Image 1: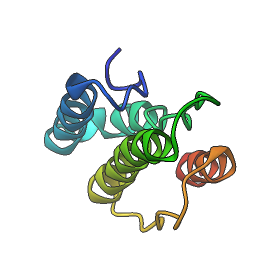
Image 2: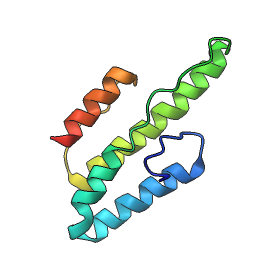
Image 3: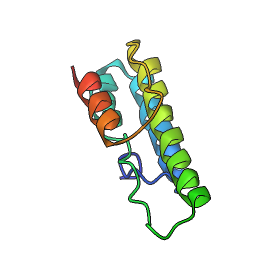
Length: 103
């Protein structure tokens, strides 16, 4: 559940993503299932507290963007496909990444 939780503040999320990717890389028969799971791991952009400071908002967006980029990088390594990570990460670009990786 950690791999697909989208929780950018939980250190187990990245560890679980790496574990799934490692299994997919070692076991060819698990690669397709690992890819499906990793595509589900793209985190949704955070719902930002309207009372949060700009610094707090940027911090949360940064955590989420780094996790999403990590998921994309892991998928590139696992599959060999070259789907570029967008310059900004939001609901629209998340949807596009998910669609692209599901093709």
